[in-house]
Structures are given as structure tokens and as C-alpha cells.
Length: 300
Image (tube, rainbow, N blue to C red; front, side):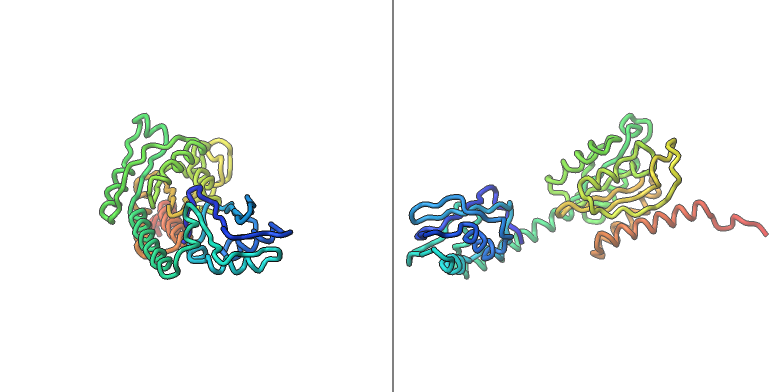
């Protein structure tokens, strides 16, 4: 479990004296004890009886820093040129104060923190926001049937779902809109539309801006003609930023209904993101295949 330092990144040792000590070595030893990369800790102040360290990372692993005072002092004291007083101690005004925690109390604090984080993540996971796409929806030329359906379906499935509004036909603007809801505690973000091969479709690219490793399987492939087909085909996307899953679905309402059933079933089963993406793509591909090759279309 990682702890955010909330900009309180400094800890210091009282009762320490240095004599021709390699500060880089001193910092590396401290980083090793705290389970951090060597270059994530640096010495920022040396005074008589005091050495201050700064952690360059915004987060630290809770298990690695809690109740590590004794080990840290022992390892620092073994560095050439370091001497420690009998009452040497580690201090911090922030989260790093856990270094000096009593082992028993530290273990209790860790367990309480894990429980709290687990509860928060569970609440976040059940919050969803739904976006429609395109100026034709915004201008009232077509009715948004997807958002009301998704909001109802998500509600029945136990989600607290909100309407996010209508996304612009611009990758940067879409990414900004999606990024804007990430910090608001949503565990699931769904967009509809904007996944086609036209030059106005940007939702896949927007999700890739936020998660370059997002899963984006193809539903249909086209030859580019730079008229209607500016891209190689139609894709969906399943990405993740922190605890939040980002899902880009097509715009047709029947496809959204089909994909929603698949998505909710996969989420309920706890399937990983890449399997969810492929399950969505397979279902939507099959739908397109059945449209293009309907049964009973041949007569003998």
C-alpha cells in the first residue's frame, strides 16, 4: 500500500555526527532501508548533530517505512564516518513519521489504513459516470438514448451513476473532460460514440492519452480513403488510470445495450481489463458479422 507524502517529504536524524562521510552512500543506505530506489532519497542538510534527508517520490510503500527507525539507525551507523549518540532518533512532521512508530502500534496503524483504503476503493468502484459524444447530440439533432439506458442499467447493477455530459469532437478536449472526473472518485467512466473511422472520432485517442497501455481491440477494419474512412477501422477501448476504468463504446444504441450486458457481466466476474476489452470486441464483432451475413439470406 502506497502512502502519499502530501509534500511532507523530509525526515531527519538527531544525534548523528559525520566525518568525511560520502553523502551519496548515506542517502543510498537510507533509501534501501525504506524500500525506495537509491536516487529517490538525498541528503539535504547537514548540521552538528543532525542530518536531514528528502524523499523525491510523492509516495512511499507503507510496509517499507513503518517502524524502521531501529534498522535505519543501525544501517546509517555502519556507514564509514558516521557516529550515533545513544539517544539518536528519527523524526518527521508528516507521513514519514511512521519510520519512528512503535512496531506494534505501527502494525495496527497499517492494518487500519489498509481497511480504510479498501473501503474507499470499494466505494469508488461502485461510482460511474457516463458521457455521450458529438455536436449532433449537443445541438439536439439526435436524441441521446445511450446515457439514460446506461444510467438505469448501472443503477440496477448497484452503481451510483452520473451523467457526465457531451464530449467534444477533439482528442485533447475529450482527454481533459475525462481527466477532470478522475479526481472526483469515479471507478468507472464510460463514453459512447466517437470510436469510428471518421476524422471527427477521437475517443479512443483520448483514452490512449490518459493510458498509453489501454486495450483497444478492433471491431471492424477499413481501407483508408481519406473521405469517410480516415482511420483503419472501429475500435473500442478499456483503459485504467489508478483505480478508475475507462471504457469507450460505439454510438449505436443496440451496440451499447449489447456491450453493457457484456461489461457488467465481466465486471461482476472480476475479469481483468484485457479480457473485458476482448469480450466486448468479440460481442460487437459478432453483431456486425450477423448484420453483414444474415442467416437465411440465400435461397436454393
